[in-house]
Image (tube, rainbow, N blue to C red; front, top):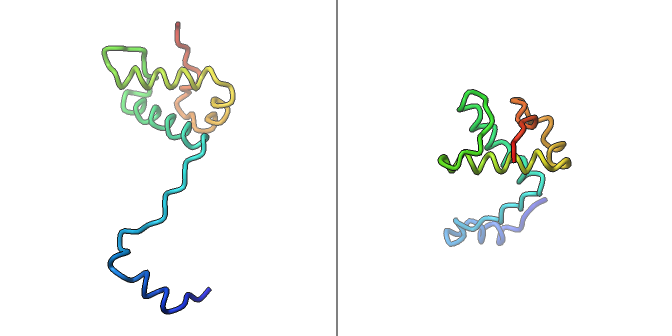
Length: 95
């Protein structure tokens, strides 16, 4: 598609240098996947272990709560099954 020269000149104007289209919204699956990948990164940095419900370590506790929520939700767990290289989805949390 050829753009008209007038239009191209407008887009080249320095006033529009910082004008960009909005980033597309993430799908619910992408949000779940991104959250799980954050858990995986943390686990890799901690010898592959799952985060524990350790309230003294806030970041670890938050990741453990997120992982527990994923584990308890069959649909989310199945979305992430192929991403789970550390077998984190088999973690058992005591209530």
